[in-house]
Image 1 (cartoon, rainbow, N blue to C red):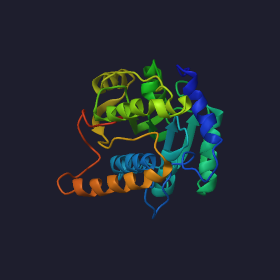
Image 2 (cartoon, rainbow, N blue to C red):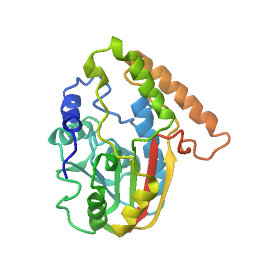
Image 3 (cartoon, rainbow, N blue to C red):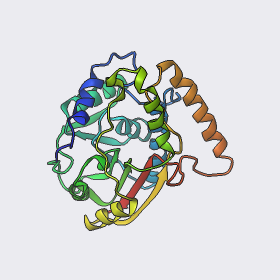
Image 4 (cartoon, helix red, strand yellow):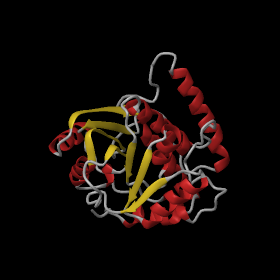
Length: 271
């Protein structure tokens, strides 16, 4: 499986070179702390959704495919005490994940491999998860087949898909268009390849890979604003946290939303 553009591969090389005082190299929120940036807010609350989905099922082992920074695996390890394995085809991404685990004193297994051909033993993991991976892969059915193979019977696939689609999130495209005359070209890179497949198409693909009891829901109604000065990140994040608390007055899960407002959708399947 090859990523369909060079920018996606180069992303991890660029991020891994950032100094530790910046926030891009890590999106982890240690226990007892609060998100300080928009991306931290997103990843922390995506983890909270996944935590509620897997809670109480006795799962102890998890694999994050396309792990990037390893943020989700680090959450599962630090908050849920899971034994985690992190897999990515990029050595720079795995290096960044190792850095995160070292700084936050986590323990995990790190694997450089293709998500469609991991080389891992079958029936190994209780949970296979990813955030923002499948939409970048033209033939994601192979990734789903491999996830099914390496998952234990009774295990769960939980993946967040962020496809190219029209929604409220397009506000950031308008924002970037207005900024274009004032910012260097490198600050306004084109988006990576994303497919436009619907949740039902992913459900069909997962079922054909062998999964059962597949479902999905739309998530994250909060627009992300980028690029912005770092000093603006915390006020926006504090506002979003306040809105999240307010939404809890009438909805049990305030990160769930509808198609128009959402960043993407979670796909949940069982083996």
